[in-house]
Image (cartoon, rainbow, N blue to C red; front, side, top):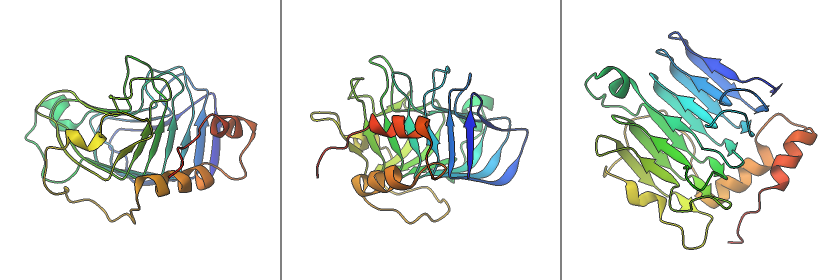
Length: 219
């Protein structure tokens, strides 16, 4: 594990075969994790991303074969993860595999005009078993697809907000894109696991304060 304060994680320039696990990040100038310029075959798991000065909790652009699972994105009043892809950035033919496999994450708190997870044109994504809590933000914006060029397999996602739009309603695909195996549980169970296990342990005061701001509905 690793604790980062006042900075962030950056993975780019075709970096690959990387695992980022049990890291706590908050207080930086940019997105908690920023992956770009051809980065590929990267897994980010069991990490805790708190509020930064950036608009997004995480930014993935010009990347492929990325797996994000069992992370907490606690953005305060800003945006959740923002994802673009080689097909979107460079106009390349759409790949057949998932460029981003996003599963069993907890995305908590975003602005009234912002989103939980935003997918830019051309993106190919699996979004499975994630829990989204607007916490005062737009509860109908858990997953935002930029336009019809976004292709997403969405299943088992849930909203922690009463009356919020079902995040799976944005799904365009009948089956998941090929991606590395992740042991996947239901959204609420995964969220509880994330709260009890994500980030660098033992938690410091900054992380504990982030977790105190999250209350899951009783299921």
